Length: 395
Image (cartoon, rainbow, N blue to C red):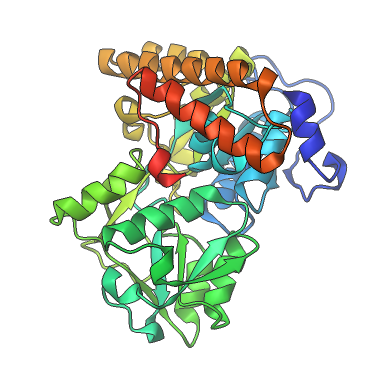
């Protein structure tokens, strides 16, 4: 698995742009002050300027101040780059979004031989007063409803299936597809917003409170979020048929959003994940610190309040939680029987995917396109044979 990731990565870790929250203190911290964390922890995250990156920096500031622990935040411009560093062991955890689901499933950009289904584990999830991803438009594009997107220019982020699939599902709310809009390809999340700013596009996806949207709001083009009324239950179901881990949500945090909020969809963002092999002591103590120090960082970055322990939504998770995180959740009394049932369901799904991959590889085609096509067919059959959701319609 490590070999696969190392082959994929094109730049050495030492040259990766790293923001290090560092405090160089000689010697060892007293045991009473050290919660069992290493002196340096590394996360991959969305690029600088995003809500997820800002939250990681805020949490890192607390780790440094309280425990002398350095948090390195490695920005990755797309889904693959964020998870490749995790798979290669160059970061401990990744704070991203739905790309974790696609990596678990071994689909889209993760259907390649160097990937396949990954045994990811969740530490904590963030469900904030903002939203994980919605569609925003330039105000001068005169888009008032989802139907008005027809014929408009919509960004498509290369290497980011989580962003593009979310946009696909939101278009489905209005019975639209990418064939109904003009697709504008961009190189990363920030480039997506830049395309709207520079009048190369009219619509881009992003978190409701994403800092780049402030730039769009302040620009001559202006900012307007597209809403998705929850009363249209058929439209809501079209979205959830494609992205079952997305839920209806009223967002109250973000530029131009009124106090009563707007009706959108959301999922966990950031979703803090590690591999199933992540060190149990590290996972346990990091989850404990993020819970106990919540009041110290909740107001220090947009959306950071979503890390609140009571917002975890264990019962609707699509990826298993790490056993060390569960151990802490049990200790503080928030892990329920329903959460455990969902955990076992998710572990079983990963088991089915892993068995399907192992059975497929020995006789798999060498051609890249043929490999991907054959794997997706084998994967779909394996899940369907067990009566499990295949997600085939959105891949």
